[in-house]
Amino acid sequence: MIAYPRVSRRMQAFLIDGILLSSGVAVTLIVASALGIQGIKAVSLAGLAVFLLEPALVSFTGATIGHHLLGLCVVNKSTLKNITIFPAIVRFIVKFTLGLPSIIPIFTTRQYQAIHDLLVGSIVILNHPETFQTYEVLGERDTEQLGYSYPPKIRRAIMTFLYNLALFFILEFVLELFLSEKCAVYNQCRGPETVVAYCLTLLWIAGVFATAILCWRGLLLGCRRTLDKN
Image (tube, rainbow, N blue to C red):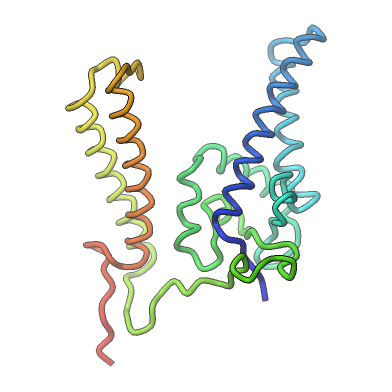
């Protein structure tokens, strides 16, 4: 049986990798500057550091440093072997570009896949599940409850997008209503405005996660599940 990690363990690995990547880029640029390397050459060296720390490690060793430290590995969901270098690069670019929202599908998909996993057909699993406590080891998720009929996945995905689009416009309206132009547009917030902006950002993130999960479970208008009559 394939054993999947809890989301909290993946988030810890994500944070470790983020710190290591930032540090790696900073150190590379400092060393390059000390050696008199500047401009595009310095940027290329920083890009090489990122490549070695993320997609290259995932492809050749099956995990990033954060994954290794926390007992995780990234594999192709069909073969359960390391993904090749091109999917590893695509996976990293999507994860880096989308940031936190990329993990939303982890809470709804059967194999706990993030967006960057779904795009390249990868899954994150426990490397040696027998060494973990029972509560750390997860099996495949039952995404649809017995006794109910669910709307097609494409409909649920579209409704998730529409709900999040609505959340975005609501947030923009609230920002303009409660914050000054300097804070809302140019991010130059001071005093109470900083607190308001921070709270609104947290509410938006929570709303994005909540709508995605509720839509996928068929609990929101437009994509509700129906009780089977049989």
